[in-house]
Length: 505
Image (cartoon, rainbow, N blue to C red; front, top):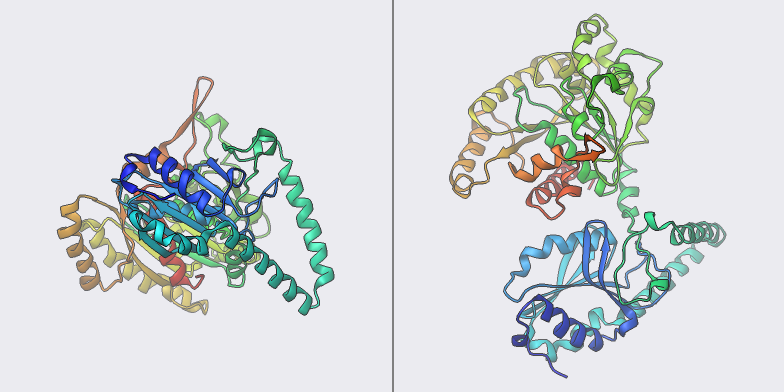
């Protein structure tokens, strides 16, 4: 049986004529080896194929046998779907992905958190290229690959004389897997497939443990996000960068040191519409700074579910404004955050601190406590003029105080272009001039990532939930609100850049 791409006039026909009728049988996948319309969370896969049918099945870092196939309309450009395919493969720990619009067939391979193109051909060439495709993603190949990897792992365990301890680990892992396999329906992922209902596959994607272990070999990194000009995107930067790092398996703590409490709101900790139900005022950043022996970070930090995985947040409160005079009279408050962060160095990989747009004590404390600084800026005239103030403040006050404490100067990761107009003419002609101005006139590096002002960034923070007659704030990270958006891609890029600069990647 041969394949003619001209017979595929829409996405449905690409699925039925190319994937179901041609590719899956040619690659050795019977009806029992593939599943259609697999849904987990915000991910919806066209096809998920297996080299071995083991039920219940669990996708994890040791399962290179799964293959995702995505079909697109013949007129669609496949490049537009690369980011989505990358998210599918990395979040599910799937090794291979096939992307096609019938006119073109591509195969990608996942390497940690990136995907690489390993094969490409035109749809009209698929008959002559089918053996090459089979050698890459055929069922027999994936099954052999899995067996060879298993043998290699077992040999390494024997050579390291860790058989006994490994068997205990496998036993506990097996019990954990069995517990997850029989989890209540509300805790499992939805699967719609051709498999009978009594043989549904429970898909439980896990974070890449290699990345977590790598990050935990490094000391905790503390990053302040600061500009003395307001409205430049500090809160947006903090919460979505935290979400991006958390998605990659890093343990993140967010600290809100701005009395406006915008980050506290954006991370979903304010669940009340009437101040009499305020549950923040009795335990927030004030208590961390005020007491030497009480109100430790683990006691005050709250679990925020604005993102999955969750992020820990130390909230702020409008009452913080009233306590500034009190702290100014306490010399110990200048270093209190440094002391409180010390006991949690093994608990978090990255600490992100949102700061007020001022030169007051609440800006001073995070800047003397942090290792690094990100300066968000909309690159407009007032924000640019404020960069001189920021530089002078760092030089005259922050770094001088750090030197007294035998701490190195704070390292500026760069000015982050934020809330930038996405108009194509602006991006082509005006934005490069603004970036050049910051670089040359203020002698500050500009970060490579640009965060554009987009509607979804505002909507994800303003998201609400109806509970009876009440409308309760329920903000979400951009990654959970619009995982395939351009904003999401921009914050992924920012996370990459930051991790590279602070030595966690």
